[in-house]
Image 1: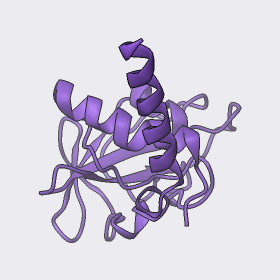
Image 2: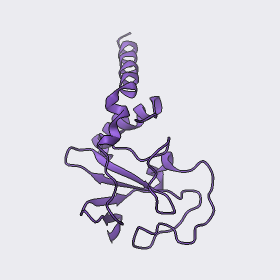
Image 3: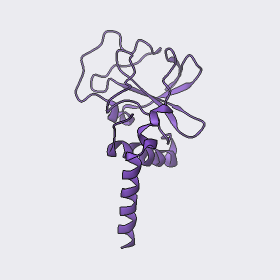
Image 4: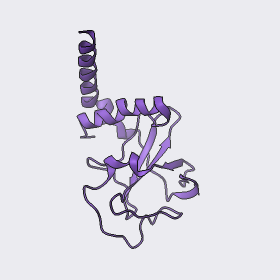
Length: 154
């Protein structure tokens, strides 16, 4: 019985978070890269304001992709330096910039170089930076689950 009550309390709490201004106004904390993204090494890039952005693998970007395959683009990602492979099934790129508070700025870059800043698949500020086990769990409970409850950001 105790487990059922705990599950019920967790569901109610997550529902309340998903409906809260804290969740729906999260993008007031988000930042987009300034200027282009300059390749550093590995998956790391730097913007014109010296913020470091880490490109995420496609497996961590499934929620930000178009619903279907897109046509090939002549000059994909014109505002990102380095060699990037265009994948018509996963054309949008996701970059995170960890914040001092343990969250992360998030940007989704479309093949034409524009940032996806509205709609269901937009990049949003993460209260939990998905790094390591605890960071990933914090991200799931504070960012992912509330998004499925309510994705109508203000």
